[in-house]
Structures are given as C-alpha cells and as structure tokens.
Image (cartoon, rainbow, N blue to C red; front, side, top):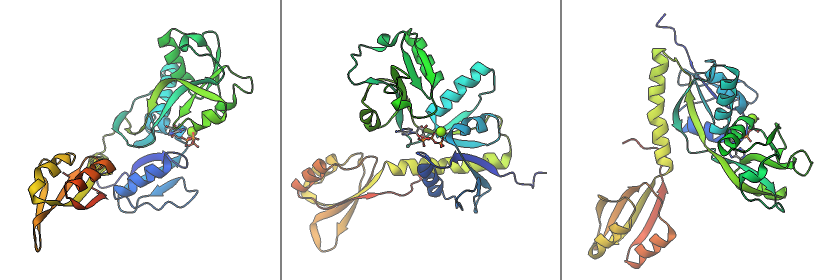
Length: 300
Ligand code: ATP
Ligand code: MG
C-alpha cells in the first residue's frame, strides 16, 4: 500500500578509510544517525533511511543485487566488482549519482627500488601481485603485456620481498607504504575517488523523493567544502585593485564602516581559498582585518 513507507537503504563502509568521511557527509546532509558500535543497521531518526555498515568490498554487490538502494564506495572496488561480474555473467548494473570529494587514491604498479624499470613492457613474463586482478588484467591487455597475476587480499606490498612476485599493483595515496617496503611507484593504472551509487530499477516514489531531497544537500555540502567566505577592510581609493585580487569576486558585497569614510568592508564567497601570497598583496594595498572563513552549507 502507498501509505507504507519503505525505508531507503544506504550501504557505507563500517570502518576504514571511507567510513569517517561517509558519516560526516550524512551528518552534513542533516541525517541524524544513531551509530551504536557493532550494529549492522543504523536507523536515521529524522528520515526514512537505514544505514547499513559493511565491508567496503560488499558494497558494490549489495547495490548491484538490489539489496541496498544506495552505497558509498571507492571506484576501484566498484570497477573491480563490475569487471568480475561481467566475466561471471552476473548483473552489474548501477548508476553513479555523484563522484564525491574524498577517498582519493591511485592504483599503481610498483617495483623494487633497485629495479631498472623502462616501461610496462619490462613486466612481460613477470609476476605481479594485486588485490585488483581484473583492473590489472584490463590494463595489461590494453598495453599488450602478458604477465602472471597473483591475487592477494592483503600484504600485497611485501610480496616482492617474500619472493611471491616481481612487482605489485596496489593502492597508493602518499607512497609512504611503498617506500617503507623498498618499492617505487612506476605506473598509475587507475585513479579513484569515493562515489555514491544507486541500484538500477529503483521506482518507489517515496524513496525517489528522498533521493531528490538528498542530492541537492550533498551538492551543497561539497560546494561549501571547496568555498570560503572572505571578509576584509579595504581602502576606497584602491577598491578595483583589491577586488581584482579576490578569486571569483565580480560583485562583492560592500559595506560602509561606521566612522571611517576611507575604508569599506568587503565580503565575498569564493570558490577558492586565499593564499598567503594574495593576503600579503592585499595588505600591501592597504587592506586590513582579512578573514578567510570556512562555509558549512550553501544553497544557490
Ligand atoms: P574493509 O574492512 O571495509 O574491507 P579495507 O581494508 O578493504 O576495508 P580501506 O583500507 O579502508 O579498505 O580502504 C577503503 C577504500 O579507501 C579503498 O578501496 C580506496 O577506495 C580508498 N582509499 C583512499 N586512500 C587509500 C589508500 N592510501 N590506500 C588504500 N585505500 C585508499
Ligand atoms: Mg575491503
């Protein structure tokens, strides 16, 4: 019956590199979540939404099989699962609602530091250890290289030292782990971020309405994340020069200062931050009280 509300199910990583940011995104979107530890399902108190907290590897499958309506997962895991399912002739349908601004990393090939590496062709006939065999196989095929792929779920970075592989293909963000294991990054094969995905065939009107409510909030949070509120006092005589230094400030707000006719206050929402160099230039023009503030939410 139409009156019966089906709660929207969203899968997120329970604990790991995506969980804090996923939770923060939900909170910024106004979802009140009671995240008691060890609970698989967390109810959102103020909306018809349930949050499922699982291993990140399970998230693509949960959405592709229609068990969850939405999910937040790394593109690397999503793409790997899609490729695997294509091979297995399983369903792998989903829609990407939004590429998010966290979880950034790259899937890279790394070899021992002392190795002379002269391009991917030098791995021909070699053994490469990875947690992402399908993504790696696709890349090797594109490059016309044939190598043996060893599938490891963990400790990939020790495989060369342990004599299990000549090279590895693993996720990197800073490269510190590679360096600590005597490896060097030589090729980036895939760049990943977290994405919000939706299952195919979602048709419940109340659920669709909820998603339509959520998306502008997510966009607003992401826009706010990269925006700053800039305030400063500027000399009237040099307004044009001051405004020219402010990123994206065609029509800034200008306010008079009580008891000071030579200076005005300028307020502007900027899509970028102000660098120290720019602040110093502003100061040199006679500006003062320069403030750069974070923005929590915005709606245009
Ligand atoms: P789970 O227990 O949920 O299976 P996990 O150990 O497989 O967790 P994490 O290490 O928490 O996974 O990484 C989750 C995702 O975070 C990765 O799949 C990737 O998309 C992203 N990520 C961002 N930076 C990194 C990084 N430096 N190393 C690994 N993953 C990263
Ligand atoms: Mg995992």
